[in-house]
Image 1 (cartoon, rainbow, N blue to C red):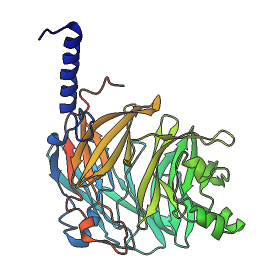
Image 2: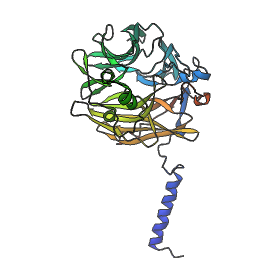
Image 3: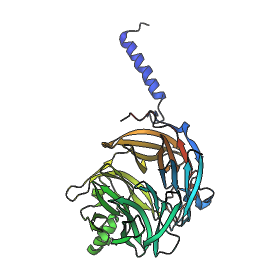
Length: 425
């Protein structure tokens, strides 16, 4: 057969197409970032305390925080429902990459280590739900000698959900023991506090946007807001408050769920909140989530607040892939990283996406891998990625054991991911 120039080009194109398809998965996408074969399982450090049965849930790695060359881990469960309800006290455990060991540095007298914060170069974790009287709330600080010091001095704080540093002050987001929402403010690194009440409900976190601080409560469901609350109750449950010097917060009635979570079809029957808020440049980035199993959450989107100033509110939704859920956020060396996952048959496809501080809406894929359950949290240290596996139940009052994956609590590592990524945009 005579091969003309036209046929030759067709043959070349066919060869290229076949090569392309051979590099694709079942859905036809090139798996250039699939690093499943590079996963190291470092261990399951909370398994000795939370062995099996319902206690698998308490092995959820709620947060991972790099600090002074180690990765600090959070676990436990503060929910009053199952599984493994009220599962404290909780050991403070870190992974040391030098010794390749998990090390217990302390313990919190609370039911869950939900989050760590680095404020002015120092490591803290708030007292999520004390195992003691409700007269005082806790927070914990790692001192210069590597010793965790417990401070039990926040008045009436059942829950201290988060801490934030702003203008040389330390702020705590609170739920008081009369179901009041409040913010605690300290000018001496938490030795003493002033508590400012801001109505009912709970303050879940803070956003620092364009050098202004905002306290964010949960957003009542649309059904509750429109059909069940009086006008006076709207005042008490207003979700967003703006900090004003010296120690007051004023309600921002103009910020509704539709503004705070744009381009999102919300479930009218569910309350919403923010989780994992970050300051990226002068913008606030956060995960929008439904409240679930008491203090836990189910995510539905990621958002950027460029401005929350009155008359100039600008919030955008970050477009992550369809059917993927975002569980955690990191901001490292000019990049925003988003941890996402999607159920895929019997396994879970986990992806890490990132964008630059100058173009937060333009995401690229850093890596993906397949695991038996989703990664609830992640961290980056020395070009290596670390992942903390989790599991979730659909109904905390009628949960099933098979929902609690035995891999819950495992710590995974993928080495040297960023060595070849530093120049990518």
